[in-house]
Length: 277
Ligand SMILES: O=P(O)(O)OC[C@H]1O[C@@H](O)[C@H](O)[C@@H](O)[C@@H]1O
Image 1 (cartoon, rainbow, N blue to C red):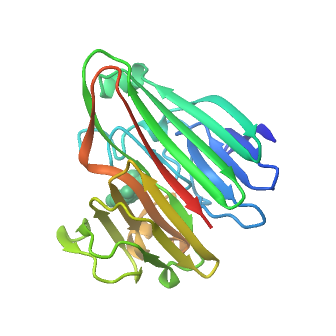
Image 2 (cartoon, protein in one colour):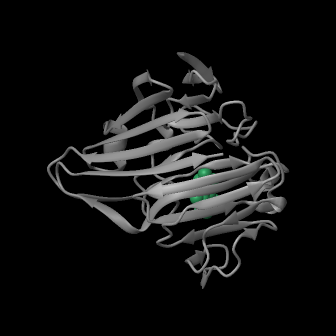
């Protein structure tokens, strides 16, 4: 079943597979804001103080960061894709699987800050205990451009201090809290408070273990992984996050940061992030 709905007062689509798995996606940002696997519970964190609509970035779900990751460039944080309203292209049931596709193309607002012609497509498919999310970007103009990107997934956890993330052993990372580079030594590792790291060239599958069970996270085409939690002090400074909700979320982001993507006219880049509980 696929039907229009609203989330945070904004247009969204709600999709349910025959086995009961559900996804809700906001047109703003092409942002998946809910994923409930079949017979399971909500797996994505969406802040109860999230604000949608023009000029806002929704805190939670799977924001699409494009064409810039974080503040690593001249654009606003994480680029403009999460603030743009994407077009709903199609939703369909194919056997047991339900798919959804949204598209963002350059427009006056994007060209004002980033003078390139592009088409970005966010596709997802789900059924049972799996969700796959794919981001494709095509250069529809006549000059090459570069970008960085991420699927900035907010995973819902019962208490981040009891969560453990595995699969990054030996991977070099930049700790953006203190600016230092290190290699991951603990695997799996747990979280005491604020963490903000870019793991470079991390290709293997990840496992997030929480009291609610395990989530396997795979990636194709994304070289890097970002692990972010604001911890108590930064959470208190974020107006769209309740002070204690840093305990209930962990961002494990599939990202392309270290080697920006360069697309020649007509070229396409595709990358995906998959989840299984
Ligand atoms: O508050 P924003 O713009 O959604 O960003 C949230 C976080 O996103 C993460 O990806 C970054 O690594 C953090 O540095 C940043 O604070």
